[in-house]
Length: 515
Image 1 (tube, rainbow, N blue to C red):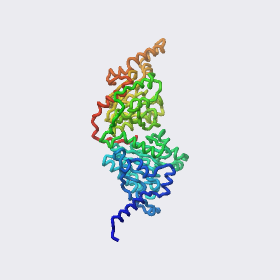
Image 2: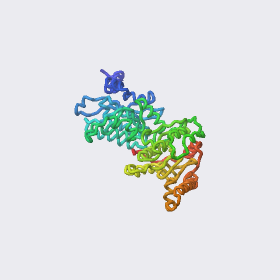
Image 3: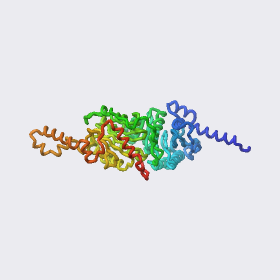
Image 4: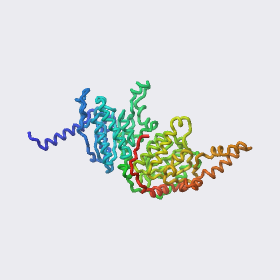
């Protein structure tokens, strides 16, 4: 029979239907019964309607061992292509757990390589939706190409284009490393993310642990810090990814999109005097300060449950996306520690890679002292923070609310570490050492010889505080550019950011490795 266009088109449509059938109607139905979207439904919910263009639909594994020649599925367990989010081009891949458990083989991995490589080449963000049991062991060392090649492309993309991963099912073995090499991880509650599962943990260590306790969203949200955001379900995960992308540019050569703000740039914030008590030892929630300053009170917090003594996330100021790093006296007195240093350093690098200005809100007594901190590598972890600030070339503005002591001075931002402007409130205390220990060191002999050492100590502390702890002392040395009223905080930060708006972008790409 002579070929005809209707026949060829019918053949194409039949093959497309086979690919869309994934692992079969029964497995797709089981996934829906579990409260999950299918891989194709996830892509459709993530992207603007009708924008998805699929690539590699008919790719298949080439394995002939262990009965694999009879287990071929068009697409090989991962959907890849490109589309749009709010009109912006993005690349996307979504692993399909109904096909061979979403396992990664050579072709499966190659499809992801291609998407990651094209995203970098075209300067477009890439979003990965992970749902995989890990490497496909039937393919043996072919997995070295399939999985390790993904790591390579992730690393090359680092700091070049935004990479966001959604953990929407099991993410084990090599897939976990690929997620960690991205910029942000959004994990759905009830999913697991780990390198080695409970069975291997028990075999090696004799420890019994559930998959949820080992790699669940709560463990990564609060203990490991691996997960940046936790979603209630699939749709919430995809909504968070869309919202997060709104703060990021297409690539390292562009700036994030500035939106029209209905919040006045010169709006005063008198409520800050109520939120922040004058007593430097009194606690308060720094998030309330962030929301008071931000456009419309909106704060997109990152790593909310990890190192809670430090707050990070995105706001808009006069429509401009801005990264915020702020001490939180409500938790641990606002001390910096190992985890807080890593959290701040990675976020600062992320903002720098994608041309997002940074504002620090400072209220820190320094780095947390103690044997556990020092033996845990406080020097090494704290140094990451310092290095990140020096390297970051984006606009950086610091505002000291109440205190900035010791190691917190360089760690939270002064000119010498690369900050463009440093502001301070009128009651802010800034010094390498707080008043009482400073006086005890400086006046030791005088105190030892005094008839009433307690009265003398009290008097000397008051003198020291008045002379050296006030922001006016720092301002006299040009450590502080301006002492401002709390109500002017939003206005003055915005004024600084406007001045720095045309600060030259770096000509070199800054990578954003995990810390």
